Image (tube, rainbow, N blue to C red; front, side, top):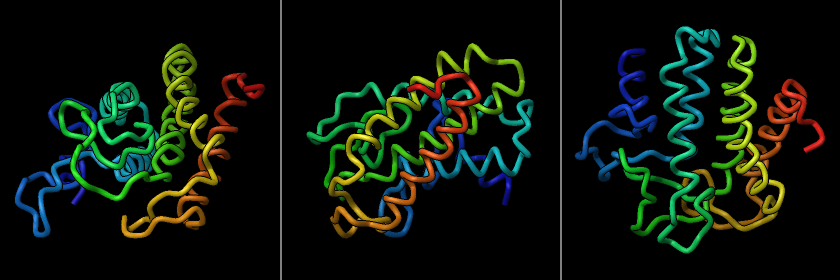
Length: 191
């Protein structure tokens, strides 16, 4: 099971997390990186490896690079790319087809995963990477959360639009707590 899980991480060396490794999954083609699933999978990957830098650095460094790439994409769907649900692998291009948009849980979940990765970096004398590379990516997602937490978005099952979806709100609260701890650790509490 662990090997199958790890095979879906850092796909093609891109840092992406693939939902399904083939193009013929029942229900459709799931060979995409979903922001929510990528963040949660990367967080679990660090946890099952006891947050051990030597075990997670390659995959998480690639995930960090993936986040940087997708945060800077132009979104063809006329939404903020930070709430785009899924991306093409390996290009990082936002999926242009029909889908439930926006997905407001993504920025918070991704920021929280990056906070955990940044903490691992700090605990392994990688302060420069944590402060100058991870923090700006987190802050970009957190800025979206702070400015848009009350906005309309899709539910967890990508079927309903509402501004009051418990999952979305809790993922945002969860991210702010993780970000606050990381900000304290790197001396950025004032931001």
